[in-house]
Image (cartoon, rainbow, N blue to C red; front, side, top):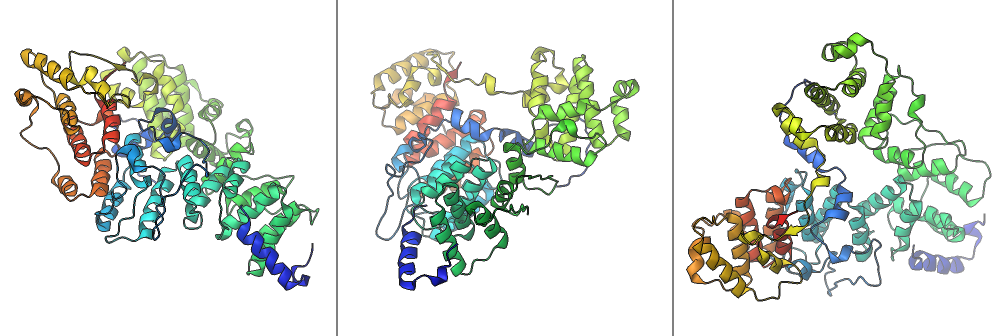
Length: 586
């Protein structure tokens, strides 16, 4: 390897300047697992988070233009830049009826307080998507009692919590803020690497225009150059880091082996970071690693995606500590539930234990109890007893913080039971855990007998908002007024109020049909609207929706949500919500 110090200093300086600046590179209190009780809100949150990322891609009500392509396109993405302030975001305000000055009258103290409350929630998919739109829309920074860096940190914290890696990548690349937000960049490349998607991890660096300043990211970048067979560039970057005081014997030994400077594999294994772990794996032809309870989720994921986890078939049933690690890994989706329950089948129980499961579990370990209960579910035909065992097994996992280890298999058991045969005491349990994905209603069915389900709803579709429906609306209201049996519901009122907000003229003679004596608007939200504080008003809407799906929100709350959006003139966003909650679906 050439010695950098022997080179001509002027020549070296010129090379390094060009390359460096031009190169694109819990423990819980025990509970009675046999009890049947209402599910707590926190449990609701956990279940609703399942397959979150997949649902976002397939079922989103917010079809945002900037997410149409999986890969970010730097050439087509244009940054909004002023002379003094670089606007950081992803979406054009007009896409959702927002405003580039939406935060101009927002008090930073209020922003921080509302987001602090929101961050304590497990937001529903609907609330999360609205918050994505709100925080990632191109808009000027708020300036009252909050700094630019604080506001950027709020965006990054939300992206980190939400862990939508497609959004994170688009956000980082479009705005070129990897150096300003290194935590996000690390989160992104670490996620790719933990999935053994090395090329995707390295592609992030090829889309970053500026030189990498963060130590960890620059080490990752050097490795990516080697992986792309750009060893000379990698060596010069490493030499420059060493000239600046970089010292890391572990990393250098791994890089020297990959560069071909030594033929002796470095067998040292480090799981301090996912990059260290990957380098340990790549440079050790006899790599073996036994994870334990303190092993990070990223390492578990790497082992799983790299096919480095041992076979469950080889596990001794007496090694309860190892089985417990398998249960934890199943909860974190590194092992499949099928593998875990195949392991449970291997436990041997006598006929007396299988006939008296509840009593038998009192003298068994928690792992053995779960295996016994699972075997009992398999051999029990009586529906009430089967549901009792399913509920007990779920509670047993939940009691040890492992509830997601019995999720898919639970639904499979429930689907085999006729809903009409469910005993009344298990109805709530059944309805809560049965997979609703297959029964989601998506196609709108027009029902002209009910105003909010009538053809009037087509106005809110993207291709219908320009149509003049004044005549059709007033004719339908005339028929409704003549029908003494018709009940004018709150959803009907919501529809009419939305039309009026858009300038559709409604005859005064129908006023008594839809007038509400009480405004039903929380005073703090109305004050925000009156003060022109769109940002905080929208944050309050996210907080109001919280963990609930929009379709499940009570109609009174829905009324003031739509009323808020009407007053803020966020028509595009409002329309998508109306199409989700008002029409009849089939």
